[in-house]
Image (cartoon, rainbow, N blue to C red; front, top):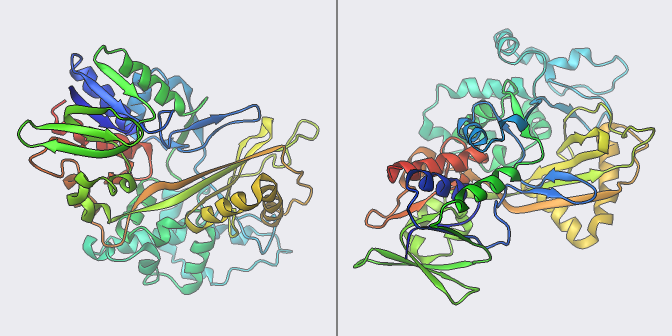
Length: 457
């Protein structure tokens, strides 16, 4: 019999265990994880060719829970600044990039690329606000997105929740401007799958180029490794891997949970059960049936990161000096990673674009992916002499992150789902259920903190 059983050994589960044991060091606590490795979507991959983030990649200065955790774990000295800016690389004019649609006036006269709408549509007040808020370096569609954000301030929250971002943006911008956002905004799901209220919040609070973004030198898996060590310092703590949870039963008379796993005969009993499982797993476990209406308001979308290591020529890679790019083909985003080693994230995609790469990889393998990458990289960058990669890795996540779908009330659901069945000491946490930090590690920590607050720990 355990005092606490935590379902899932990702960052939410480990963080919850870490704080429970700090506050109640004599407690008995069990973590059950289905994989052989902890961390879930916090996954730093390493082989002889590269060391890269297969899952979660960056964070920013407003994500205070993660920054505090890094400090607690002795990892603050490994925080490294990165830029939040990106340039748009339209395939119609290979090699000609725009930091912003306001930069169009600086395009060389020889360029054949012409924006399909008049720059006069950008009223002077927006230009003034942008100069103050964003500076000269920003994401390629920031001006148009800011117009939508400002217009939304006069809308009821409930109205914005009933439509996606593009549906609302069409009430503010011209069709040509909408097309430009669709082409130049790296993510698809924020525009189409997420409801407008939460998408606007995400763009304003998390994707703004005014943020200082960071990565963790040597990888975010260090957070997982250090949390595991901290948890296992306590005598009453235990972590069992390769345990695929299939049932959670509760005895009303004794107030005890019994956890069953499909791949082992042993069951596990505990007084408090904390789920740190993603929504698509909860949907399959009967005890969470009362929560299904809330779970159905959260949409899952695939993510795919493709990293390639290229040979160096005279000690330099073909992409030397290339900025982070968004582009209007199946690459969607191109992100230089380590010039000195010739490593680049040759594509970062979500939703239907991520599925394209998964299907190509399943059908034609690394060779087929490399062939397509070279065609599209040349199309977006205008660089013709791109060599064949030495190695390419495709990291596909079927449910990469959660999105508050159309019709979801994120504030209400995120609070109600923490302890969804009043008579049970059954709790739910995880990035999918975060009100303000969905799609970020901070979201997992935020929801874990809500559980800890309920437990007064």
